[in-house]
Image (cartoon, rainbow, N blue to C red):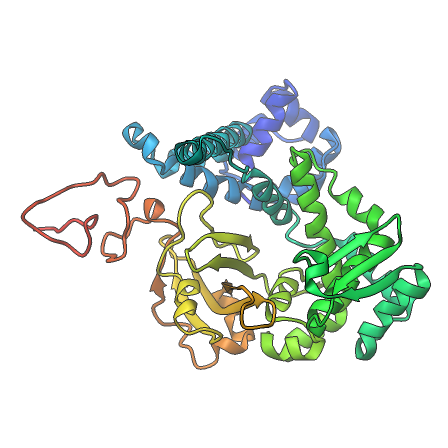
Length: 473
């Protein structure tokens, strides 16, 4: 059997091609009444019928059957309609779910309009602020990074073409894990005729790497940490040896600007560099053997903590799957700079992250793993762990940036992770949400605004857990 939530897709496909239920039913050799039940999710769409639909309408079966886009759209629309802008419209979650299932193209159009609205709103505020201060200015667009995040999510952060390219480059270059730095240098200098030189930081204007293709010259900052040096060498080698594969992947109509396309190119080259430093099969075997102990893996592959975290989210090769993880990177102000969800957890896109998530608590104990059994409002349970990482150059006056990296999986996978040892996975989890506007829990003392379905009620004579948590008397 195939999923029983495909009725709206079948109905939309039939209408798109101008067919009646009777016509489509005849072509599929079923009764019109049975097709009607399928379209209303009262009967499951069987595999033979799915194959028949795919042949009739020239569809990709796997794309047609995938539910993740539906869930992502539903989550995004829920967050959009939680905006106070829609507070007087009394929209309910079932109505929003129905919209995302039955009219997904309309839902995506609404999402696009809302993103544009938020961007214009942000730009207007930033411009007003700058003009008030000095009379000129502008504001950068945040849409390219959103488009690239969505691109990675659609592909589950797994790119077989880049994995194959990394294996080919490694094989042709004779790269060995026990001598990777010299092997990468040899591939660049001898194999590609690239001059690799090292200079003082001032000569690069603060950059780590500068590659000049025409001059065939790679300039790197002197005294880079070994893990950073290897990554920059792998990045440049991937750029030279697999540029066509990267360019083919980023031809996506949903990357709507040159900036988004360029940002996507960097993301894919970073992916390729990670695949060179941490080959898929050996890395997956090591991850399983170490039970996803990130520090052990970082030592094994001589890379950084964050690089291991990213690589762990790429293990979606059919027949060789890792644990489906989610990844979140936030700064100390709570800004999300990276997010990816293979576990199914929903992240906020347009507002702040729930303060109860353990990724925030990681800042209170730097470089220490903080674990959490989390329970979402809909009952889904996740096991999460988080730790801070620090970036910055050496020296007393060097600037340093601290982030918190959070990883997690569904609770049924938690026993495979070393960080869950000693945790009662059957116990009650910490109640967390996506954002305050989407969370129905009224007993939260950290609530920052009222939920979507509960308008703000002010009682000057009674104080509750928070200003937004009413007291029942």
